[in-house]
Image (cartoon, rainbow, N blue to C red; front, side, top):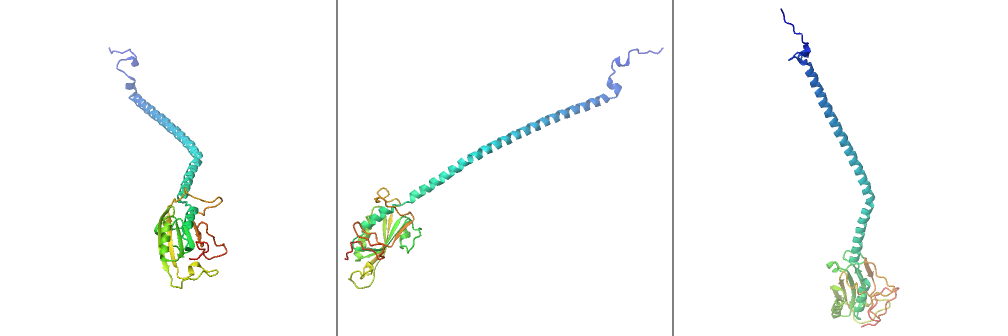
Length: 264
């Protein structure tokens, strides 16, 4: 007689669904696992992208805010730079200023009575452009200087005048570039409208008096209401007379002697 197993097939031991389905269940489970992994990866990637986009937007907003603040403060930076430039300009002008009234006053009271000037020219540096021919020794020092041309009675008096110029307050150096005695007849007074240096054979000299850059700044003796000449140059074709001496009226062009109209 043939034995018959009455236990239902699904309840029998050693029998699985896989065995019945032929492995299709494992394939489905594997596919589901792959889908879950891909979904998880996509979700994480999407989250990272959104976080990066959020950080980028935040950084851009901060950059815009910082740029706006910098634009507001740019005016202060420009003002600070302008202030520095102006301070440097004022300091440069203060360092280059020179007390011309005091220097010319010292020269006028030091010139000997037997000396006459035909030209006097002052410049703060050798590069200053002024009408007229410059003394050959003016370029020796980059200092304020007064170029003096004139005449006196003898060569010995020329040397005395150079020595006198060296005694002026604030003088750095006195350079005599020339002292020539032209041939001519001696004696005779100054003709009407004539030139004191055209009489006789008086020696004609040309010298340059160099001053310190800040000479006599604290000792200036400017009269009330007197205005100092500009820092560029001071040029004149008249003699700076000594204290107490009479000056030639502006209408006359001949140089005025240092004495009160007396001749040696």
